[in-house]
Every structure is written in C-alpha cells, then in structure tokens.
Length: 288
Image 1 (cartoon, rainbow, N blue to C red):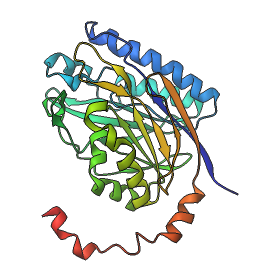
Image 2: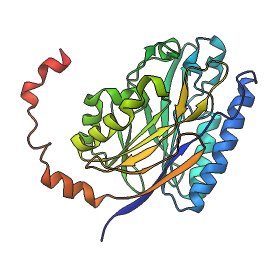
Image 3: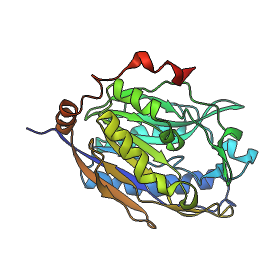
C-alpha cells in the first residue's frame, strides 16, 4: 500500500500596515494564519508549512532597528508556544518561520518545526543570507545559520527545511537528502523582477538531484511602503522527478494542497542512482 501524506503550503499577503505597532503587526498576521491553519486541518492536511517570516511583512526590505522587536526566544516565545498548541489541537505537523532572538543583538531567520502532538522537534536557521538590491538586507538583521541541515522525524514523514535564498545553493539541498529527508520545505519571500525565472528551475532541480519531494512557498502582494516588487505566490509541490504537481495562484491568499506518495522516492532512487554514483573524492574544490 502506498504511503500517501497530505501536505499543505500557506501563501498570504501581509495583514497589517508597517505603520502599525510591532505587536499589532505580529498578531494580525498570526490571526490570519490561524484561520488558514484551521482550514487546512478541516481539509485533512497532515504537514503544513507557513511562509518565510510569516507573522510580519518582509521587513528586510529596509534597514530599521525597530524590527528587532519581532524577535522571539525559541521554543519559549509566544509564537512557538501558540503554534505548538495549534499543532496539538489539530494533530498536524507545523513549520513556522519566525525571527529568532538568542539575545539582544543576535538573531536568526529560523523555522520552528513542531510535531503533530505539539512537541517541539527543533529548528532550522537559514544558512545563506541575501544582501542584495533592491530590498533584501538580511545581513543587517540576521546571523548566518549554524544548525547544519537537520531532518526532523515527524509523525507522518521525515522533513527538512531550506529557507528562501538557500535554494540557490545546491550543496545544502544535497545534505538534506543524505540526512534522510523525504520532503523539503522552502518557505520564501520572492519578488517578480529578481528571481521569478529561477522559481520553477532550482527547486525541481533539487528534487531531481536528491530524489525527494519539495514544497515551495511564496507570499503574495506588494508590501508598503517599500514596493520592492510584487511577491508573486505560485507556491508549489514537485515530486522526485521534478514534476510540479500543484501550483498556487499569483495574487491571492491560498492553501496549496498535494497528496504526496512517499513510495515514489524508492521508485525514483532505484532508477536514478545518484547517491550510489556520487564521487565525493572529487568534490574537494567545492569547500576550499
């Protein structure tokens, strides 16, 4: 019998003006996502990933110290606790990307991973940070991630996380496969002019090269006051052959759902022997 897991991705527009207080911005976005999580549970989603920095606008569009107030300690912070309660309530695995505060002056772009019983499984800290024009100033806020590339054994599947800009670097995607990932989620904030032509190239390529499913999430809309570009949505799942099996819209809040047959991973890997035929002895220049 096939092992089929229903998975979901939430893409959404920012719910609050940047002029609002940090507290109001955070709560309005959380409230919006709670309603969408409830909808996912009603549709029997078992693993659900939220978008990058889901409880705020994509604030690295500017360099302003006020946004440090979004940071939360993990797993004791209010958002982590609420997401744990929500996961347990619905029996759903949740990936919740937030701004992690270790101490004042030390922050990470982090995804919290929570099992279906509400247990905190761990975190992934974004490794590769963009500092690019226009409006991707993440090194002003975050330190490069130091978690390695963990794979989390959840109630339904072994999952990994790779956040936004990480996807341009295939090395970590390969490590996730070597670590046993069956599904890799990539929560993102990506605008049309900068990288849309890469959106449906890189992550399906990572899926093919490593023989796993990928779920890619992108927010929607133009965020004031920065107007760095239009977040174009088009969140999607692709299979281990690189085929996109479902894709979201370009301009609206949406829950994107796919039933992933994990037995397909064995089928593909027994055909394409990329793990067997790797030549690790010849890759030394990659890390020199």
